[in-house]
Image (tube, rainbow, N blue to C red; front, side, top):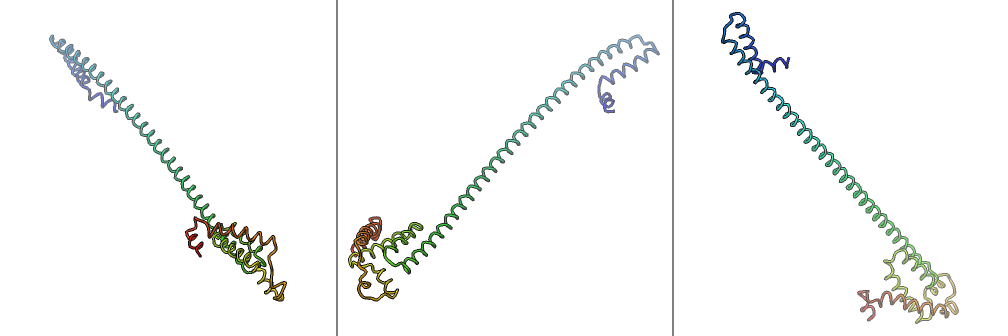
Length: 232
């Protein structure tokens, strides 16, 4: 049906219709000049048909080119869409990896803070135990160093205190912590228990460590209170 409609739309079709009608008239009436007119009209129809054929081919070619152009544009858009999707996917993966890394860092920091808090609490307990239950300066020294190893922030305070206690022990030639322990344990407070004199090993140890601890704390130039403490 569409082909018939297209046929009716062509000029050459109607020219040939006219030729057919004129041919029929000539056959009936035998008009002399009508044959020349029919021939001329026939040539015109053939020419029109050729022109229409050329125009139709050009139209088809243009349609093909337009279709090819549209196809190329569509493929470019598809390629661009795929590229955009790949870029978005890559960015999403990078953001996910970054979020995971940040979460891992936060988790690690949180675990470090938790461990630091545990170490601080454990060190506090060790120091409390040392101050309450140590039977000598030597025993307290061991526990203080254990606590400082767990939580170094206690180093300045505890080493300063130990250094002063050891200095006092060397000056007084007596382990005051051991003396108080013996008194609390119920030993008679008379010689030899009242004296608790230092032996040579204790005196040498307290002297060396008092110098070490006080150098790291009271006499440390990095300590902002060093000058004032040295003056005192």
